[in-house]
Image (tube, rainbow, N blue to C red; front, top):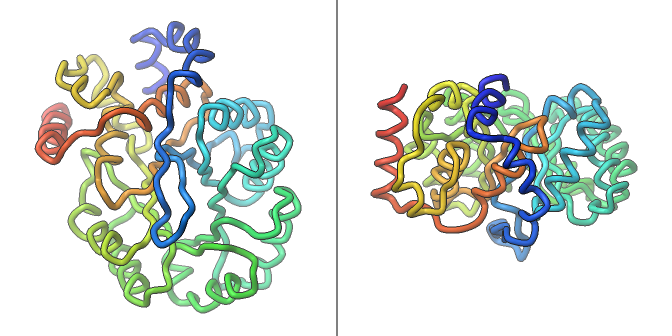
Length: 295
């Protein structure tokens, strides 16, 4: 994301990179429970990086190492990128700690079985963590995804989308009581999920992962040249990236927020949002109003 690269350069990314070795000792990544289980995920996840999708092994290795070394656990990945992530996590010695959320087709179930087995081979695991799909594919063929879970290929199944027009489809599956994970978009500028779908997920005991906390980089263009308010220190926020991430994480329905980057230095900044205090509801309103005034 060019906007973020320019932004971090302006505020001193060299100093941030120099601080990377110290972060591990000081930072205590918050772990959040997967509803209805004894298992937890890191509050800050790693989204489906362009490095994974491009098959950039060197960048992916550095990215994953920086993330796992600092307490990260959840990685969102797809296709051949998932195979790369699974293999590298294993080679780096974090295979047992890595929780992979990978994408599969619910309609093309035989193809998904083969892809799942390939990913199992890459990770060295006996069962996948999370198989999810898009609602336009998953909802009409939801029974197929449930069958893959019943067959023991995965522990969890879910739906993922960032457009509100799919929320009604997702809500319909939530009502069946068979949805384990829901992935939707949320940021101080994209709040419809808070009103329409997150309260139901909280009541239904569905794990929620969040995409687009930076609106695909648009957020950094909005806050560029803006000074982080002094009151951000009240919830241990040290950067504009953490400002949006802490807004997301302060919602009680959220299990993990996905941060998509191909730059290990950004990982350090993002993971900072997973520790320390979070804003209360009054502060969340103030945060929304501030970012909207910039936009």
